[in-house]
Image (cartoon, rainbow, N blue to C red; front, side, top):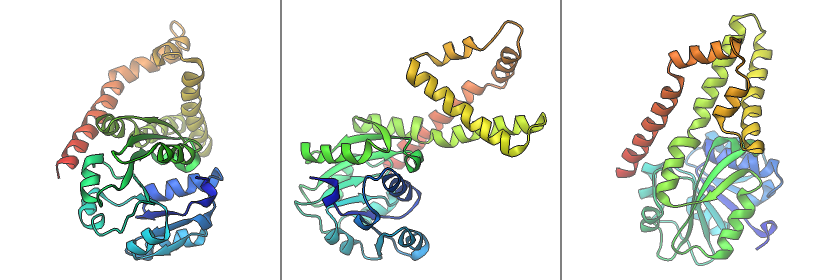
Length: 269
């Protein structure tokens, strides 16, 4: 099916839904007129209406109006939100709900509902995201082809298992927050030694972007990149020593471990 023929609806209009919508519009994947969103209040819907989307407070109306439906509500809301939805054979359901496996989703949906579980990070809004994809038990090859057309322009993505997606969620998708903290720390340090704030933030952001691109395009291990800029007795190795004394790598590993435990706890509720 051509993307131009799709009507895509979002149940939930929070940050993840808004990021996906922004990415799709920015990448010209779909037009705003092809998108619809539902939420209990106008707090987020009003912003989306300004972007040219149609909106509603009625989830069932959205499902009747759309062929692809993105579930973007909170995990604890799913047991109330999903069972009444009038999905039929013509619907493809995408979910961005954390900690809810494909079988758990399918138990709350009408039998035979075609589901693909996804987990993006918020960088999808600028078409530089990461998305894990899990194929539900009723999803077809055509469904997966549609998913490819939708997500490939806004993110690097991999098809994986439910357990792998949960691990990626805790290790990578949440990592945007930690990368932002690193960027802020670099900028604060630059300000501390005399650089103007605006320039400090810009150069910190470019440093992180450039390092990631250097790894992706050369295949160099992060340790190799680090070693290549550490001259004997130089300023960089002094900074590396300071970071090691502060336990920067252990802190990142602890963050991933803590996020993983929280995902496990959420999945039990």
